[in-house]
Length: 254
Image (cartoon, helix red, strand yellow):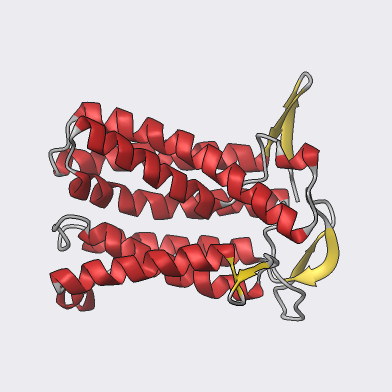
C-alpha cells in the first residue's frame, strides 16, 4: 500500500487524492469531445464541470462520514482528510443535483449534457478506485480465502486479514462498462438514453459488489450504497424501456 506517494515540505500528497485529480483531468477532455459532437455550448461545459467537481467532493465526503458513523469507525483525522475518505455514490448524487440545478437555471439541454458525461463518469470512477486500492482506505471487502485475496497492513485503515480487493474489482468493471458506453454512444442519441444505460450498468455492478464489501446495512438488509445504486438502475431501466433502446444495446460491438 502507498497511502502517501510523496511529501513536499510538511504537505503530504496522498495516492487517493492524486488518482481523484487524475480522474477529473482525464474525464474533462472526454466530456469536451462529446459535448462538441453533441453541439453543447462551451460555456455549459465549464459550468457543468465545476458543479460536478464541487458536488463530487462535498457529496462524497458527506456520505463517507454517514457510513463511517454507521460502522462505528469514525476517525476525525481520516474523515476530514482531503486525500481520502470519500464515498463515490454520495459524490455522484450531489454532483447530479448541482448539475441539474445549473442546467435548469441556465436553460441548457439536460439530455445531451448527461449523455456526454456518461462514458467519462464511468472511466473516472475506475481511476478513483485505483486510489482506494493504493491508499487502503477501508473500501476493501470481507475476509476471503481466494487466491487473489490480500491484506492491507499499511493502509490508511489497515487490516491483516486477507480480504476481497474490491477496489480492483470495481476498477475492472468500470473500465469494461466505459468501453461499452464509448462503443455505443453514437447509437443511443435520444435525451438521457446513454446516461440511462450508464445508470443501469454501473448501478447493477455496484449493487452486486456491495455484498462482499464492509459497508453496514442501512435498511431492508441493504447498504446505503446498494439503495442508491439500485434506485439509479431502476430509473435508467425506465428510460431505456421508454425509448425501446434494447435493439441498439443488443447489437453492441466493443
